[in-house]
Amino acid sequence: MGQMMADQSSTFPTIVTERLRLRQFEAKDDVGLHACLGDEKLMRYWDFTACETIQETRRWVRILAKTTSPYDSLAWAVTDRKTDECIGMVNYHHREARNHRLEIGYILSARCHGHGFMSEATQALVAHCVDNLKTRRITAIIHPDNTPSIRLVKRLGFECEGGPLRDYWRVGSNYMSPMLYSFIAN
Image 1 (cartoon, rainbow, N blue to C red):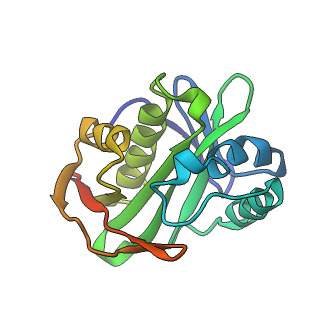
Image 2: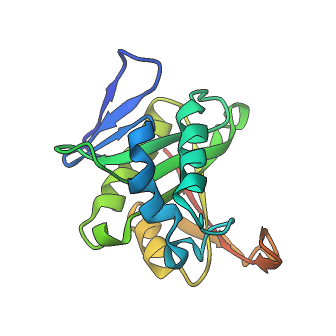
Image 3: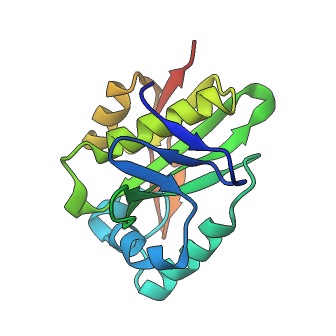
């Protein structure tokens, strides 16, 4: 799945790619993550509403920073390798180790779109899940109007398996019906 180095010196697996460093969230990541979670346009395809304040995002940073158990979920701050500035997030969740499957999610600051950063980060995440967690099946649940995300997973070898999953996500008082994409490791 590409070049990747995992730092095994700590309990949290840091992943380094050509331009990015995926690491555990820190308090200093609040502004970078808020550029993602606080952006209503970016969050329109997520299963929860955008953070209205930096305080809400700080709460998420604290939660994500504590999520160090690889058994169910893990989230990484996507950072610029040179500056260590947070520009997004990748994660896995709903992991079923016995069945060798999990779901992934990702988001990138709008100002960083169009440079291949999310492809690079997501490819590294998929490689980590396959190589280190021995995951066979990786799914991404994506709103059908989110064409950039659909293009991304298709480039990485995911295929559409179904959908729309009727009223799968409740966001505020509305329901969304996303599509199911999956990657099966050999």
